[in-house]
Image (cartoon, rainbow, N blue to C red; front, side, top):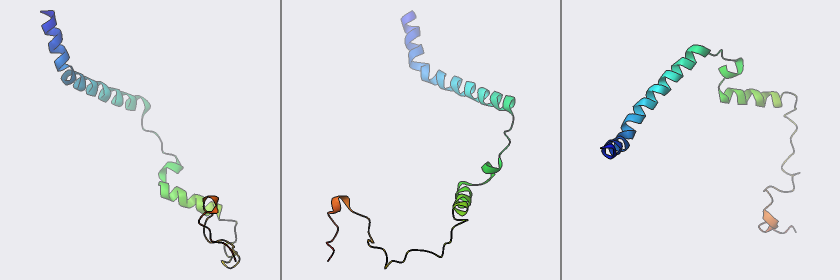
Length: 92
C-alpha cells in the first residue's frame, strides 16, 4: 500500500511543489517589503544610465581645449596596425 502512496506522491510532486513555493515566495517578498519599507532613491538613481554617461563625459572634457586636434596630415597611420603588420602596405 505504501508503494502506491509514494508513487502517487512522486508523480504529483511538481503540481504540489510549485504552488507551495509560489505562496512562500510571495509571502516572503511582501514580508520583507513590509519590514524594510520603501527605499529612498539617491540622486544618482534618479538619473537614467544615458544621463549619467553624458554627465561623466561632460566632466571629463570640462578642462580640455577641444579646438586643438592633430590634423590628418600629421598622422602617419590612418588605420590600426594589423597583427604582425601583414596587411600593412610598404611605405615608399
